[in-house]
Length: 290
Image (tube, rainbow, N blue to C red; front, side):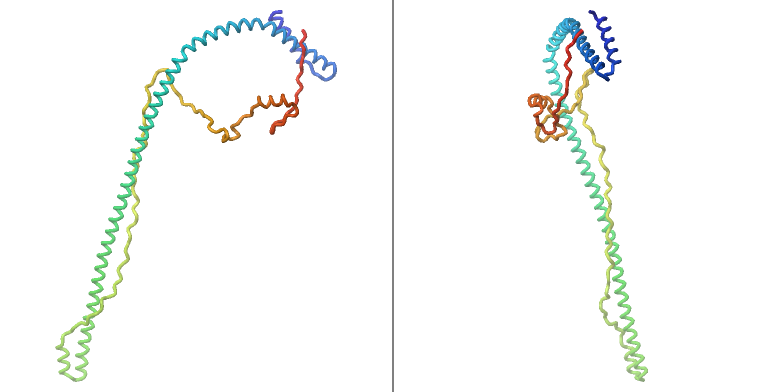
C-alpha cells in the first residue's frame, strides 16, 4: 500500500461515516464496524509512516545536535557580554538616578527660596501699609485732640467774659457806680476747665497681601545614557518573585490538576476533595481491522 491508496481509503471511509446516522440496531452495528475499520486504518497509516518518520527524525536530530553544539560554544561568550553590558547599564542608571536626585534637590531648594521670598515680600508690604495707616491715624488723632482743647479753651473764655459782663450789668442795675467801675476794671480770667473727653479713632488694620509666587522652571530630566550601538537595543521587562506564598491572594493560585488526577486514580469513587467532583466517563476501546 502506498500513500495514494491510503488517501483513497481515508476519503471513502470519511464519506461513509459522514452519511451515517445511528437511529436503530443495524445502524448502531454499522457504526461499530466503521469505527473498527477506522482504527485499523489508523494502525495501517502509522505502520506505513513509522520508518519514514524514523529516518527523517534521525536526520533532523543529527542536524539539531550539530546546531546545538555550535550554539553552545557561543553561549559563554554571549553570557559574559550580556553580564558586562548589564553591569555597565546598571552603573549608568545609578548615575542617572543620582543626577536626577541632585537636579530635583536644586529645584526643590529654588522653589522653597522663591516661596519664602514671596512670603517675605508680602509681609513687608503689609507691614509698610500698616505703618502708613498708623501714621495717618496718629496725625488725625493729634489734630482732633488739639481741636477739642481749643474748643474747650474758647468755651472757658466765653464763659468768663459773659460772667464779667453780667457782674458789670448787675452793679449798674443796682445803681452802684463804684462797684460797676470796679467790675469793669477787673481783668477777665477764664476759669480752668478739665481736659476734654477725647475718644481716639479706631485703628485700621492693613489688609493681608497675597504672596506673588513665581515657580522655578519645570523639572529637568537627567540625560545620562550608554552610547547607542547599531543593532543592539535593550528593553525593560517586569518580573516577580514570591516572597511569602501564604500571603498571595487566591485569585493568583492555580489548581494542581496532575496531583488531583493521581488522587482520583488511586481513590476512584471514594476520593473526597473539597471543591472537586469525581465522576466517570466511558471510553470506547476498538481493535482495528482492515
